Image (cartoon, rainbow, N blue to C red):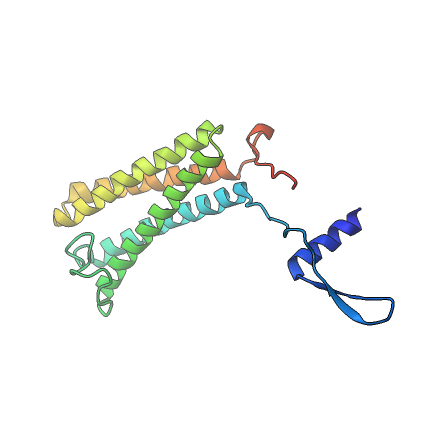
Length: 196
């Protein structure tokens, strides 16, 4: 039976298989069976985007510190655009660093929203995961607002400090979500693909 299953998999993935008839002539046989569908491993997808979200959140903090240290906070004096452009002239290193900070923050947003969506869609019974994913998104929304306010307030030190503190909270919550995604689940929370 196992040999037959392996032949089916090979046939489905490689298409028609040549076989030799009793006369020694090669002929093509076509399978009428549908190809084997490989289900998405939902747990691994969640783990991947949660880890990428935490890495991006940390990288955003590092780039934010670099922006502050280089004095590049107002290299892009408008928000959400940079010098009136979606992609500014990156010849100035200050603009390049500030723009990189914004790009990584945008990636962080995508990964944290993706983590929240996956946790709600496929892991709803895991209430801690869903709650901390929502917390990460809440911190992120506030963080984006403070980032915009940091620019429009001409780098007011109170807002810059709150921006850093909230960035740290966003990273901490995204790291916690990544750890929750990596932990072994109880059997009732595991995704089990059904055999077709």
